[in-house]
Amino acid sequence: MLRHVIAPTRDFTQISNEQIWNDDLSDTAFRLLVRALALPPAKARATTVTELAAGVDGGRITVDRARKQLMRAGLLHSTRWRCRNGQVRTESMISNVPVDEGDAERMFAAHFDREDERRDGPGAGRRGGGPPTVPSDGIALPTGETLTEENTSPLPVPAEAREVTRGTEAEAERVLLSLRLSDPRLVLGRGEVRRLLPLAAEWLARGVSSASLRHGISDGLPEPLRSPYGVLRHRLIEKLPELPAVVELVGCAGCERPFRPVSGEGRCGDCRSSTAQTPSDSEGPARVGWRERVGWTPATAQ
Image (cartoon, rainbow, N blue to C red; front, side, top):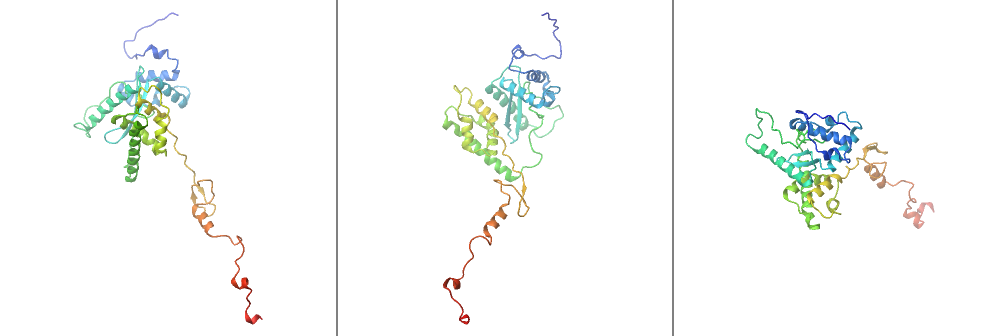
């Protein structure tokens, strides 16, 4: 095989030969990796995975499979982070060399600490005249959404919803801190608990009990356990239960009022209660009076 190679002097991307010869990466995964690494930092922050996958054959399923391959290879990491102002953000990081879970979390922590300091520092809340601050290289690939926008609701959260959220997070924090009682290796620092808290709270919000959450993320741990935080985070993401199915409304056969059946019943609760409290005339023998029972007849009839 003859080769004719001219080294580019501008507009090029460096990538390791290890990734080129990695047979565990599909063509789609490799193309997404190269495209993400080729983006300038500022543009990478505003580019979605859909835009990166433009022109790739196979559709969304192929792209999602490629993303999982990059995550297994340690080239793509994703996390959810609760900022000091209470907002939860989703952030991703792409790298040209494999990065383990522990190093990735330290990079995420350093990045979000800088973000918090920038928000809390002098001039926070006021828009300056200069260009926006560009994060360091490496924090690049989004997971299907524009990362320059935070995942916040434009409407104020009702007080009842805030109370439920705080209660769920408090229970999730209690479960995470109690893991060390079932396995001494599962000792988490305060920062690690804070980063795992949104994931654990999502389990509870989907109807999972505290005991099921504890067993789901702590049973059958690998030996040796090199990164307790990485294993717990991986299980919280990969084993997240599906959202409970929503039962469709049906019309009541009695009053035609819409209701959600529990076990296939055709009448609403009010109609079932009224039917149970009003027995049918044909049910049971007719009641016999005392005159008939003793055989009494009026004196005029004698």
